[in-house]
Length: 347
Image (cartoon, rainbow, N blue to C red):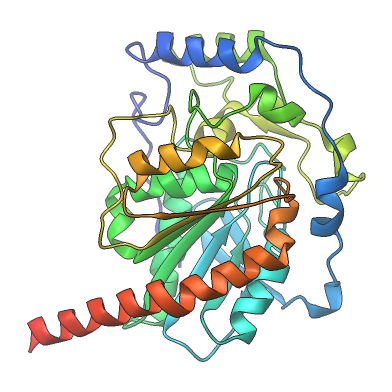
């Protein structure tokens, strides 16, 4: 049963504060300065072509004020991989990747839907009560996996804004639950050198509402935090009803690491890290990822794939093969060696 959460203080570290207001404003101006480009729909085609007959049954994990819908691609292994979808997305976007990994027996894969998305509870795109709630939800799910497999190892991965959430998690108190990280074309924070204007035409920011809501929060007023501040370009999604149309202020803050922090402490060198992105990513500048990862995780690996877009990278066979190799080699070797070291120390 999920633990009840206490009310969060108004001065939440994930929220916009007086000291960071000007930095957020500069990043917002850079994001929206140029006209929004037309978003190509071709990257959605492969990711939307999911054979529903192959999907595992949806399960629900109770969490505070709701439940998280997820699918489990089971495998006979002590490694579990939790995958978090991106902005406006849903867990089934990982189907091709999850199916291949579990079929190879390299990890038991959980495709997780965050609250207000996919098969999870809550108003679509507007189900987050406070900025760190999604971090709490991921921690709750990781604790659940750890309880199921006490001696196993857990890998956490995320796509796009889900990658940003994973990055935020790596900087949280619950990071000790995770043994490795994988990022798929991740959002590394507002103001990151990887971010394209308007996220390539995927995001429409309601600037007046965003500024008004941020100022209200600075004055201690949070009653407007469920208002819409972002719309997504649903027309580009081939009219797929599984996509979420908009996000509230709370959801926007919760889905990511906050601002880009070039001086933040990197992910521990003891955690294997892989970042993959497509060469024609619509939302981010792929050529900027290698330098960015040197800050986020200097020991991590970067793999860029020509011709792949922001969404269909999750269904690209080259990406799947790279992920399988990473799990077979570096992750399995690192996890086994660390586990052996821990057992030796315990003895």
